[in-house]
Image (cartoon, rainbow, N blue to C red; front, side, top):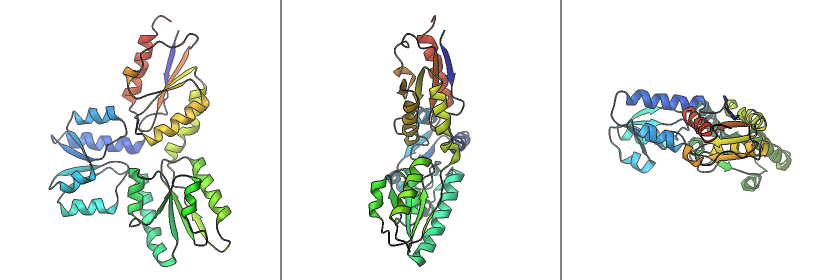
Length: 290
C-alpha cells in the first residue's frame, strides 16, 4: 500500500502568508488591486488571486498609474518606488516582509556611514532578484552584488568591506563568501559581516534533507521562477535521487515504479499547501489498489 506524506515544514513562509492575507483582505473591499510583480513565485497561486481581482504589473506600468491602490509584495522595494507612488498619488499596501524591512534599514544605515569612511557595501544575493533590487536601492545603486566566489574579484581588498546577505540565501554559501574575504583582504582593511539570512528559510534545508531521505520517492512542488525552490530542490536530490520536480498536478501522469511505498510531497516557501494536498490526492488516485 502506498503511503503519502506531506512535509509539514514546507509551504509559505510567514512573509508570503502576510502578503497573501493582505491581498485577500483588500480584495474583499474592492474589485481590482494592483500588485507590483508576482505576489509569490507560483503561477497557480497568482492565477487564484487574479480570479479575485488581483492585477500583476511591472515597474513601467506602475509608473503610469495615477490614484490607484498597489500592493508591494514580501520581497520589498527600493526607495524610488515609494517616491513614484507619492508623485502619482498611489496608495501603497505595504506587505514587505518584516525581516526584509529590517535588513533594508540596516543596509541604509551602513550606506550613510560608508559615505564617510569609504567602506564597500557588498550583498550576497542573486543579481536582479526583487529583494536584492530593493536592498541595492537603499545604497543609491552603489552596493556590489556577489552571487559566487568569482564575483569577489570586483572588490578592492585594500579597502574596508561590509557584507550583508539576501534573506533567502544558503548559510553555507554565505560562510564560504565570508571565509574567502577574510583570506584575501589586506591586513589593515576592516571587514565586518552581518548574517541576515532568515532562519525560517535557512532551517528548511536540514529539515527537507531529513524528510527526503526518509521516503522512497519525492515529489518536489514549486514554481519554475522560485529561487528558493531551486535551492531546496537541489538539497532534496542530494538526499534522495528519486526526487521529481513538478509545478502542477497534471504533470503527474504515471503510477509510481514497483517497490515504491513511502512517498513524500514537499515544496518551497512559495508553494501553497492546497497545491501539495492536490498532489497527494493525485498520487493516491494513480496508485490505487497497490
